[in-house]
Amino acid sequence: MTTATFMENFSSDLVSIKVTGDGANVWAYAIDAETYARISEDCGDEDPVDVIMDEYQVGQLVCWGIDESSGCTVSMDVAGKSTLLKIVHTYDGYDIDEAVKDRNLSASTPIIEYNSDAAERLGAVFDLSDLSHVFVDSITWKDITLQLTLPVVARDFDQRKLSLLVCGMDSETELSALTYQTGLLNGLEADIIGVIYDGKKYFFQSECKRAFQQRRYIVGRTDDGWEIDEKVTI
Image (cartoon, rainbow, N blue to C red):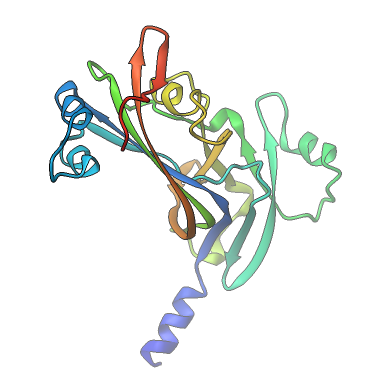
């Protein structure tokens, strides 16, 4: 058996999941008061973004940008056979059978469940203690592809154990308040981030093409909550 033949046989025995759509990748970088003071004034020959990237205290990807309700395409490849999956939304007290019936889907329709009660919470580990300024960087793309390969061979794969994993943007955390609640996520509610298979979480890698907009903001803590800082231009 040649190396090429071996690799072809190996890859055909895998299970992969792919999601395609459009949206915006958003990142958040919290900075301290000293860094904020530097970028608020003339940085000389330094780019304020470079200063932030060198000195930020905590950073996080806010979202990949594809909402589960956006009409995105979800496909599953098992041993080289690709199948399109319909997302079916469930929650505690509203199971998959009820959801399928309400959607008027036939029993043979390929589906992937999204249980909103199993969602991650945006900003659950984003610590803003003693930090009052956050740089938010957003790039909007026409084509986003999220993809992962499960560590299970096709012959052992059980689709009943597969569900979609999302991150809820309206999570009542400070990161949610300074992005979602200030309107910087373009209405994104539930960001697709991975899948759950047999009780374990697996996260997507992202490939993005055809960017058409980049927006950058400084968001600051005020007595009335988080607000976009109009005094600083990035």
